[in-house]
Length: 202
Picture (spheres, rainbow, N blue to C red):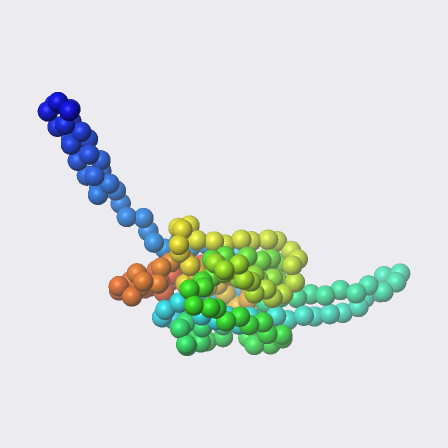
């Protein structure tokens, strides 16, 4: 290769590497904005390490009504939930009333999707947590408006849930995604979440 071509190749590679170094580091955190009516007390789950377990309580109000003949109806919503970080359970957000659904995560398993349904007038009706191993925990009843949360960056996992609740159940919910090892380096997902935690609803 002639000297000029060699020098030109080195220059091109140098410029390319310099441009890569100059590129801003992508924010490792992302936030899936809260859905729901949003009345009541704000919350944000917190803990150190990976999420290793989930508990969700659902309330079912079943009733009959008469209009020419009997109808059966069922109204279900999420009354509360709890996350386990490492070996420590977070507080219960909402309440423990109703039927409990629980899932323990395996080693190297993480929650990578949060989906469900919500009623714009009151509660989160249905909640589904999906892991990177394809397992799911679901609670409530799949009716009303759909939502689907997932991380903006590949490899991220659910770090916390935020939203609002009242005396009966969860009225809004949002998801925060991140990397656990970066928190161990001194960053805090909770601090980041508090900057975007559920706004005040009118």
